Amino acid sequence: MEEFVVYILYSEKFDKTYTGFTSNLVERFKSHNELGNKRLQLTLDLGV
Image 1 (cartoon, rainbow, N blue to C red):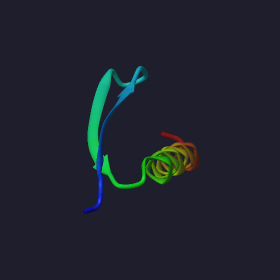
Image 2 (spheres, rainbow, N blue to C red; image 1 turned 180 degrees about the horizontal axis):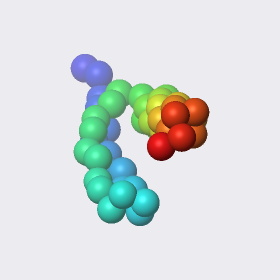
Image 3 (tube, rainbow, N blue to C red; image 1 turned 120 degrees about the horizontal axis):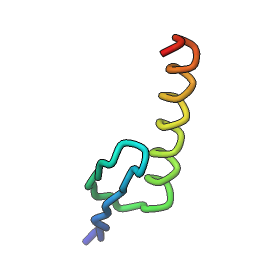
């Protein structure tokens, strides 16, 4: 049976929490970080 990890991320910038689950915690954190960087770049590109 595959094991899963439940995690909670907190953003100080937005004062928000995100709860998720995954079977590969390291890859999931990488994914969150890459998505965050893409959002930041899009924001900068759009001048928002």
